[in-house]
Image: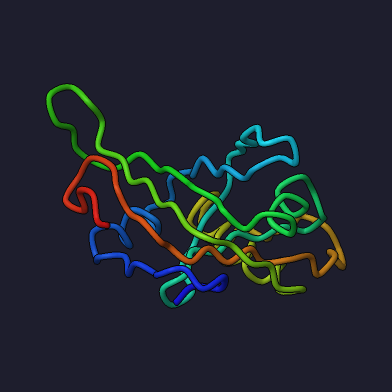
Length: 147
């Protein structure tokens, strides 16, 4: 079960590889008025959860605290009939306090390059880690649509 009691979906190895590929993810939360709020984020895995580091509170954090429903998409290798393979994960999110500098430092090795010091500031705030528990996986690729 997910954080909010929803049924969880385990990412198959091919989907996990996309999450860890170093490609940016389009991450969508829900604004108070129901409109989607989409941003680009670095993503990683912590067990079966997708994780995102945030140094400072922002609209994503506020939205998740109010409504945990989220989705993200990532382009993947390959294509079918001229359409780029992609992974879409729908899920529920929760936020833990602290740990953002460590997570972002780890993800920077993949997204920026080996040896990168990140965050690029002395004594960064501890921030937050967003944890996404997948409830549905779909898209174009070997993961297909999993219900």
